Length: 561
Ligand code: ATP
Ligand code: MG
Ligand code: MG
Ligand code: MG
Image 1: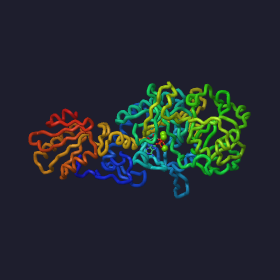
Image 2 (image 1 turned 120 degrees about the horizontal axis):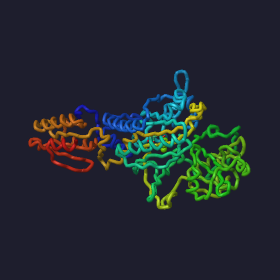
Image 3 (image 1 turned 135 degrees about the vertical axis):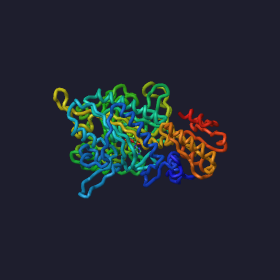
Image 4 (image 1 turned 90 degrees about the vertical axis):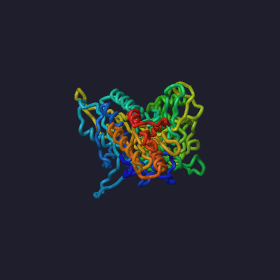
């Protein structure tokens, strides 16, 4: 492609509100432009990279036998009501009404739509297992859209959903997806780690892993063992904990709120006017023979093994209902008031707990309960927080810490959505069974920023060949020099004929401008046709290796092929 007419509006200076290095460079290199907070146009260069990333994702997904389809972004609210997420999801869900006042949401994710589709179209075990995926624009009204494509409100995601007849089937596809993700992130050139993670608002019963691109700007903290392959995410989903005042400074006394038949997070959320994922859910355990309440976020599942490992209990198990009753608890989402029990929570949950939730009385919830004041605490521990100096829960060796950007996430959902939305099938005996699901996401547009973050140093960046918008940037120094023109045109033809993608800077601009632009755009190989063109020689630069050569046209061809 000739650069003359190409829409690459490079910038000498980054706009003042761009904080992240990747955001600055994608703006300055002419890759993206902002339309509104968290909403971007992908300019021709940016779109070329996105297409290449998408194609790698497609190839690896197709290789596992997954089938591509495309679902609507506009989703009827009823589906979300059916799954129970309409209220739980909170303000991140963009809601709208049609002209007949019917409610819709713009899809932040597609569990509801896909599960409904499969419920209606797949009824026999013969069609299973099935794994369906799409590459599509997603909408999330993020509290803090920022860092360019890293946290957008409109962004591109690959999301896949697997349906199996049993858990063994799910284990198998989960492993396949995990491996496909490792191949994808390797091919796009990311330095990444797969880590054990929390379930977030997607929820589910089984394990889940996040794929983290290592970068200081990352919002997540990854802890990994220096000796074994243990790695986990320490960061909680960022559900607005930070503005909650701490402890009892100026804290009001607790209030009783009448919530008839109160048992569900959704009802509690509505009664208190607090997003459900900020509520505290209490699970009652027996830990080393003693009754224990575990405070966790309403959307979070605690893994008993983890409790055991991190808190050093010999033995921990969910309490039986008689034990719960004997200890004076009312089942439901309630924290114990005035009881002498072990309370296990993590730091952030305690902050929220101290202000919002608490109840242990039928049909009532208590607001503004302060653990320590209203709840007697005998043990507070970090279930999901570790700090410098801690040791690996698996092998006891020292842990190390990195910052990471979540670029992918794989989940074992189990029956959470298939149950709620009635996705069942007839097994070999003709019996109706609930499908076992998994879901698997990749932040396609986020990858652009993650790569830029890793591949930039200060003012310029270099794309990996696998996703570079063009492989070769061919620069003719003097637009009007005949010898240069001839050699450059010849190379342009030859490279293209050989299937190499070339961006040819044929503009009538000063050399300094051309080089500056080329640095900002970041193609991996630069071929400069200048003064030595008369002798048939060009400058060849491999930017990733920072290697310069003086080559003939033949040598250029030999090296790039
Ligand atoms: P985060 O923790 O960063 O908010 P998430 O856990 O909410 O992400 P998932 O629901 O797991 O995101 O979505 C799958 C993938 O989509 C993520 O792993 C991430 O790469 C990408 N993604 C999520 N939110 C955004 C966003 N606002 N902008 C760009 N990509 C996103
Ligand atoms: Mg996350
Ligand atoms: Mg999120
Ligand atoms: Mg996630």
